Length: 259
Ligand SMILES: NC(=O)c1ccc[n+]([C@@H]2O[C@H](COP(=O)([O-])OP(=O)(O)OC[C@H]3O[C@@H](n4cnc5c(N)ncnc54)[C@H](O)[C@@H]3O)[C@@H](O)[C@H]2O)c1
Picture 1: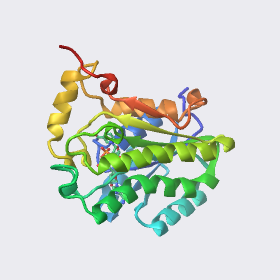
Picture 2: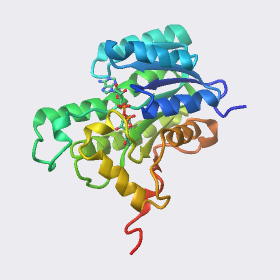
Picture 3: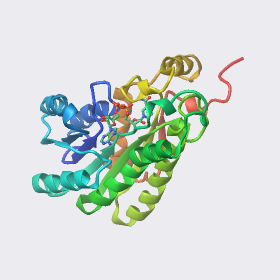
């Protein structure tokens, strides 16, 4: 029997089969969860409906997290179909591409700062606000972060402060929902070649660096992130909330790998 048997999981953020959310959806399905998916816009509809079919998902709904109406519609449809549910996975981020290259201050402006924070951090709180009344006791919420929240990295730029805000959101939401026995966590994943990550200039060099210097001397996979996500959203992790769990082949623990 899988560790998510009997649970219903809403997963936001699949754009392709390289998406971290795809790795999570596959692992959660394997562990027995019933899956519901969303896609950002009409452009992704056909593709995500195909993925939903592969997972025997209950539904695939449009949800653009930049719009409150879209979030509202998603949860009213979910309520009609499921009533209540157990797991919310937020695997969404965006910043204008021109900000993800050069020095931090070079292309930074008020609008770019706002967009990165709104889509990548506020959206998690917005979803948590709507999901709260529909999530069962012992339910959990999960989001995806990156070490750029804690340490300055080349090119990652404005996404660093946006992920720092996201991680603080995890702690604040966890603190508020803990008394209802709802847990809230993040996985800080190592670099993976996906559509979003390809927006960061010289992603290839991030991957090479981790391969050379992380304790496991390789990069992490979406399957490994999916497995960790399944554990964190299962009752096996009942004592864990408000945490940022690194799934990065150990990269974050190193100061200097070797001389
Ligand atoms: N790939 C990496 O190296 C890496 C590492 C650590 C953390 N992450 C995080 O993982 C998460 C998933 O990214 P990914 O790497 O799988 O890339 P991806 O491009 O496959 O997924 C990003 C998703 O965000 C969605 N999205 C963007 N704006 C949206 C909006 N307004 N409304 C709804 N959806 C929207 C896209 O449609 C897409 O499905 C992101 O939070 C990302 O920052 C990625």
